[in-house]
Length: 98
Image 1 (cartoon, rainbow, N blue to C red):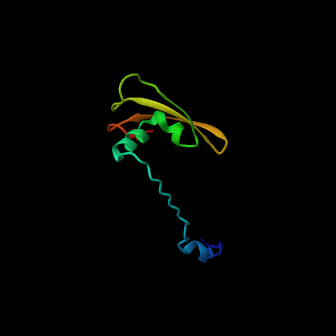
Image 2 (cartoon, rainbow, N blue to C red):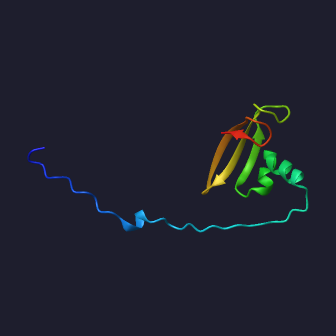
Image 3 (tube, rainbow, N blue to C red):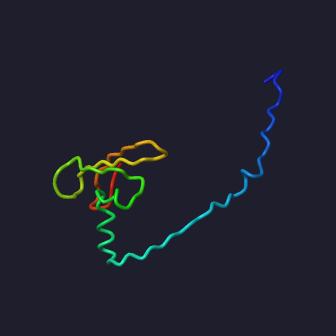
């Protein structure tokens, strides 16, 4: 437009242009149980407070067997605050929709 200066491109930040390496960590634990037993334990969400440090409570909203459509809730302490989530089983045991 007349009377306005030409736009000046923003300076390029060379650090933002680079890929930043993110540290990675792995931990292995031997559990003297069958894979089926371990899977059954960790996918039964009422066990979460026993093995997930930040989870403080879990509850079922709907009665009955674990099945698609059944809903449950979970409370966790994250950054010092209580946070709750409700989820629904959508494709069998272990698959949840939040």
